Image 1 (cartoon, each protein chain N blue to C red):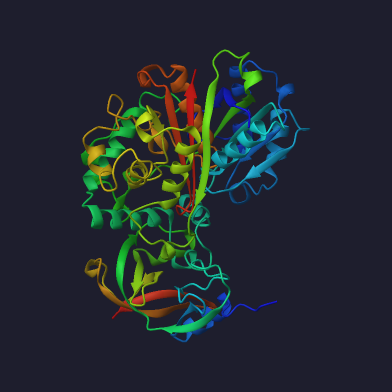
Image 2 (cartoon, one colour):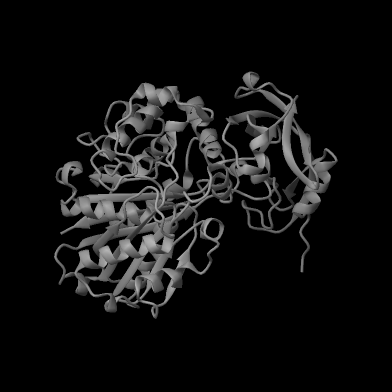
Length: 126
Length: 384
């Protein structure tokens, strides 16, 4: 048995502390986030955790105005796909940026979105 | 592998119903068997699509429930769940069962009921088809997923909100010709553009509705089909997937699963996009139709918006898309949608679509997309 290099639980524990972690394939060098069991580029199982800077730009975004029932109090809120400078992308909630300032290409920086025991990915001003 | 045909179809009225999803399926299935002029005693298996039954009806085990309500409890049943593509996935597996010679007569269909719960609740249940750890925790919704795709498409290709609105106007117009459609009323471009934002840049009239409904089709071997009135042949049925997470998708302006499933289906059938006469595709949002017409090879990447605006996808246009009104106007009972699309194409290829009939339709295509674009099914149909 090979234990995964980084479980989802460990990823979010680090994210809660403000650290974004990816995995790099020890065989082919591919970078992935979120962590996967096998490398999708070479199918090997030789990951090493790597810290990511958390800096990126908005690739696409939307402002959600009709929300699932657990989030109805939050509307309107923005969600964006952010391309990190290392080349991989992540979906995150946008925080601390006025909705009318959002634009494709806008530089943003990772920060944890903490709600009780739950941690999610968010991006705020660079 | 044996040739497979569809010899009967049935679809309930789409909209709000005070009946369970299994009841709605059963009505459609009985209609499909009557249409096929075949006894229920001949059915050897049921492949069934249902998505949020656990949530809206507190119901698991919907396969045998649906078969029981129909009145044929003893046959093997399996429920498929690939989000909004469920009954199209069920169809593909049923085709393989008949093609492989395991069964000669198989029933495929789906049923869904969601209008018995309030919108914020159904919005939550539909969001279950995105990732629980990475995406649902952000408050991502289904319109949100397609809004991200729309923005990427606008950014890359210059697609406009008016072009997306043209899809809604067209599908509502088609819906007026379909007595089973949830909406049978024309809308104007201005109404779409002035409707409230749900997830920018998508507005209320860019989105398909929540819908209750059922649909079913009867699949048979060639030998059984030859004795039926008007078989429609399954020329191909292909599936493909893609990364679950939006962040893992390389280019949000495209749906690679559509491109892969379409390529596989065209190859199976020995056809190209120019051979297709009529298309029922997954327009859960207006942008979804534009991206699908590109992914299916009907238009070049980036040309789908302009094609819609120019009327190329309207009835009477170069390649009519969603003559039924599509998910947008016909409605979208998610577990039944794939089967309902197949029922429309079969009706078109039989030449029985009445005022919405596509002239000289000989080859038809159905395309159904599941959830966050991670599942796509494409099937091709032809007549003698």
